[in-house]
Amino acid sequence: MGMCEEGLGGFSSYESYDGEKLIFSRVRFPSAEDAHKCFGATLGKDNFTILGREELFDRSGTVVVGERIVGKNDLDGPDSGFVFSLDEDSIVQIHSTSLSHTLIFEKQVRKY
Image (cartoon, rainbow, N blue to C red; front, side):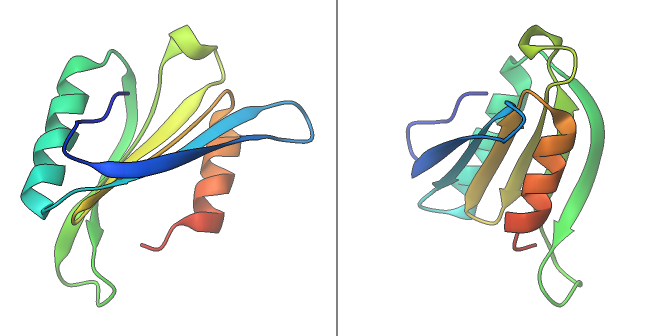
């Protein structure tokens, strides 16, 4: 998945002890509106299968601040998967050659 040029951020890449590769990226935007536009544009141009989709709430659990998508792209391998999240003015992407590694990593680092 690509990102839009308005955002600033970085990425880290990892390799697990069993050889699975994982990339974590976080991009912040000048506004929540810019992040939302990029999130929608990115979803509209990539070819993947959505396995799950849910709203993200603030810490109080009352205000919707974004969205989380779990999916896969068979071009990256039969077991690959990703989590793509919009959280107010940020987009987080976790992508791995293993969906299970993606979900384990997300559980360790997510703040929502």
